[in-house]
Length: 323
Image (cartoon, rainbow, N blue to C red; front, side, top):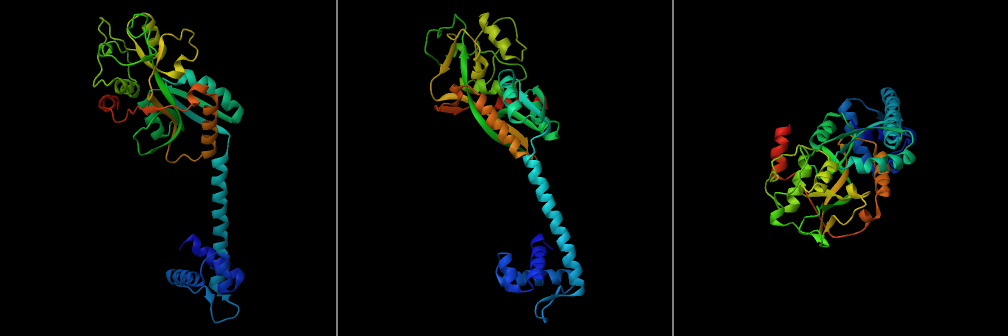
């Protein structure tokens, strides 16, 4: 028994004529007749007396048709409920965001979303990629803003923008006076990484063509998780960093920041949800709000190469330890 078959018997009851009922249901008359026969054979009851003109339902058929009408009304109510839920812009949303993006995007995003969705209350959690993906799968978070692709078949990704990486050099770096940065072999041991930011580190290693991370040549090992700390280490001439462009928007000293030549290395930033998430209108509003609050430099067309992290051996190895 199918919803479509129920629609057919209701139409037959209203029209009392096979040809007219078929036209109302936008199906061929033979097709409607076959579906009615299949339904009657399945339940073992004749719904219509075909020997009477006009077509007349049997006594049991009348009961079945009335029940079908109630079921179809409930189906319509479910459909209306789903549509309303998809378009509902109120309630509580648990939002996660990677820590390498949060300090720079969230202040802009909050202001834009206050105007776009004033009735939505966002609970924002900043964490590393591995934890955010776990929270999405367990239902602890509804939406995550993160670098993609995740490589996770249970998550749905909605790309929003591509953020270029730039090099932040200290004043002693040999390329400080160049227009663009190109990775040098001697830079390998100077590259500063973030502790526990596996996907971010894997992206940096990919950009520089490094197979495995190296400790800096000083006597210290840096167990840090903040891009701002990285920047301060660079200022202290303890290495150099490759950082996302949004992290330098408010920096006044621009000469130490070097763009890469095109195609620029970028990370894809997406809204990521579980495959059961239904609030599509909210995702559209968030996508629009994020895009509108971005600086013009990130909206321009440019040649790029997207840096992946899910297939990095370093990422896979590191995440296995984390999980």
